[in-house]
Image 1 (cartoon, rainbow, N blue to C red):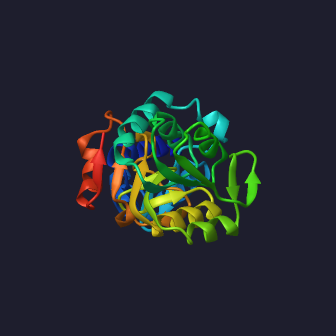
Image 2 (cartoon, helix red, strand yellow):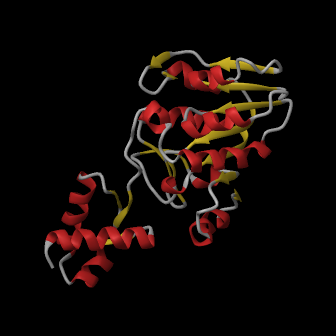
Length: 250
C-alpha cells in the first residue's frame, strides 16, 4: 500500500473510531510500527491528527480569527446557544468565555435578566450594554485585536478572585479522554481559572469540536458538569461524556 493510501486509511479509521493505535495499525496495514509512527507524525505535521502515546487522536478544527468564525456553523451554534439559555437563572454570577457560540448565547438571553456577567471578551461585554439589570465586569489586560479578547496574567488573577455560579465555555476541542484542550497556552490558563472558580461548568460545543484534541490542556473531562451540543450528534458519540458524569443537553 502506498503512503498516500495508508494516510487515507488512517484518517478514515480515525473518523470512525475516534482514536488509532500504532500497534493495531501495524497489524492491519502489515507494516512495521516504526513506519506507522512516521505516518502518524507526517499526518500530525500536516495538522490532520494529534499524536498521543501509542497512537493518535483527531486534530482540532483549523483556527480562524473571531470574525471569520462567526460565519462557520452558525446554524449549529445558534441551536446550541438556544439550548443553553435554560441553564442561566436570575441573580447568578456567570463567567462567559470568549467565543462565537458564547456570543450567540448572550444574544439569546432575555432582556429582563438579572445577573452579573464576568468576561474577558469585548463582544460579550458589549452584548449586554442594553440589559438594564445585568452588571458587566470586563476583565482587564492586553487586548488581542484579532480575537477581540483581553489576555495576560491579570485576566487569570481576576478570575481567581471571583466565585461564579456558572461558567460557559467556548470549546476549541473536547475529548472524553484528554478533556478540554485549546490552541494557546495562555488560553489554557484562563479557562483553568474560570473552571476552578465555578460551581457549574458548561461546555458549548458543536459536533466538529467533539472527539478532537488541541495542544494545550485546560482541564480534565471530570471538571465539566454540562455539555450542550447540537441534535445532530449521535448517542454513540455522547455516551463517553455521559459515562463521565456529565449532563448532556441537545
